[in-house]
Image (cartoon, rainbow over all chains, first blue to last red; front, side):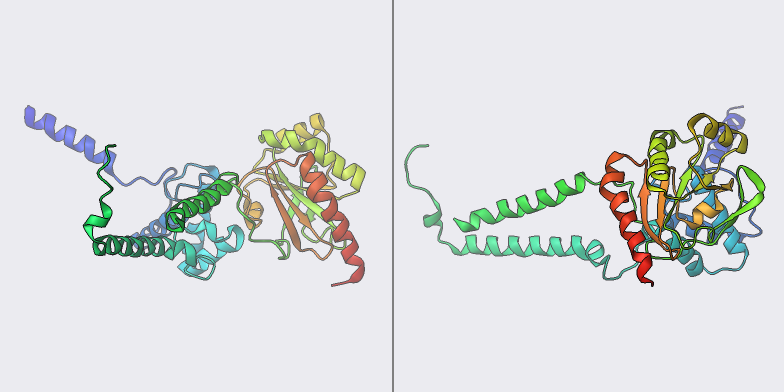
Length: 144
Length: 180
């Protein structure tokens, strides 16, 4: 009895963990198609709920965009063609992975540059402090 | 003394940068279509489905494409502005009725007035996607050569008309006399 209960509970939990595309099931013709679609939908941004990718968003526009992506996959378009179709209309913002070019250079490398600058500053300051004789650092013997 | 000011200055610079960022609306994405030809389309006219509305209809005139729908509350807010643009500035308005139901759309126009020269009926939003539309209302200013010159996201208000649209329309109209 306990075993059957555990088995049903396990089945129940497993059913809830099946990867869910946000909404309507899509008519994939095969696994390759589904995987290509998932890969693209994860990398494209929903233009309405701009913090969600196309795979997760509930917005009607996201559904339209998903339909369009699938239509293009089934029409034999390449990933690059699909992405440029969308960037032609919505700009580079629609890509969650922005291309590395002059415009996005600061976005990609800025944080590392700041980190490096901070590390260098820290290094210089610590070294300068270490060089100074301790007696010079200690303030006079006056009470606080 | 200067050495101790450096972190303060860096902080001030960062603060200014972030503060100006706060004032910007993250939902407004610059259009990818500026200075490019208006997307090709041919859709049935909402008020007379036997007729077709196409991207070439107003070639030769500065005009505006206005994405709207009866389910869009901001469209109602901006509607007087559209009336003003059509009436006082003689600006041809092409409506793009976005993902709407024709009965509802016509009822809406009956109630709030119809400033449109033509209204393209786009129920599945396919043409709107070509325009890079991601909500309503959105407005495109198209020059006489059929190139999109400006996109306004969200309702058009007094400030938009006075500060942006009116000068822009005058400028674009002056443009066409000189040729491409």
